[in-house]
Length: 119
Length: 112
Figure 1 (cartoon, rainbow over the protein chains, first blue to last red):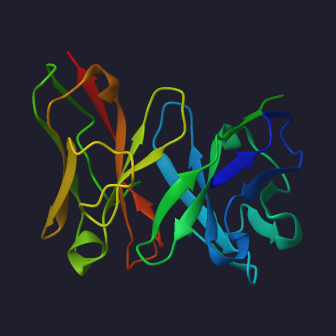
Figure 2 (figure 1 turned 135 degrees about the horizontal axis):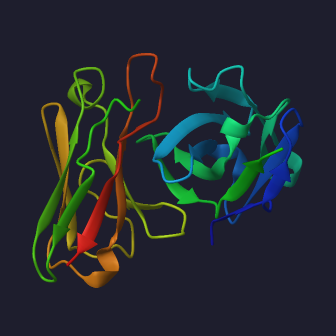
């Protein structure tokens, strides 16, 4: 069974750094992209970027380029999304999802990680 | 700002048919990129509902169907049920700087 399990909710202060994770299991982790999607409170889905764990090729949405860093450790089948300096506007639910390159959709999703940034 | 536009909300009585439109442009849907649909039940993660315009993953009822024409796509729900009350998002790709994955603005479906 394919599963993506994300790390737990985080509460941070503005200016702090953060790294959240997404652990894949039940499939060959290095053969699929892992994407990250933001959902701000009461809003829609926004694609942030993705990584191919096989070779750590990372692609970013222009809206998020330079704002976050996506990485992966294939030895532990885990992908990461990190911020160096959080802002209140980063408060959102963040989902990881498995990307299928033949049709460019997301066929499996993590349960989400809620990030709250508040002073 | 999303490049794929959906109506904010649609509603219907149980058993009725509702459709959700997804309007794009010549740089995304009109360029021939696949269209996919996701269902997000309240408080849960999105779930793939339709892929490649009109294909259902295993377990998705055949009440859900998709279509595409020109620069737009549609999701139809026939025999609407209370459990279908959710947010629905279309998704495609875009040749412009928008990137490999672009989502629609989302549509809230209400079962009356």
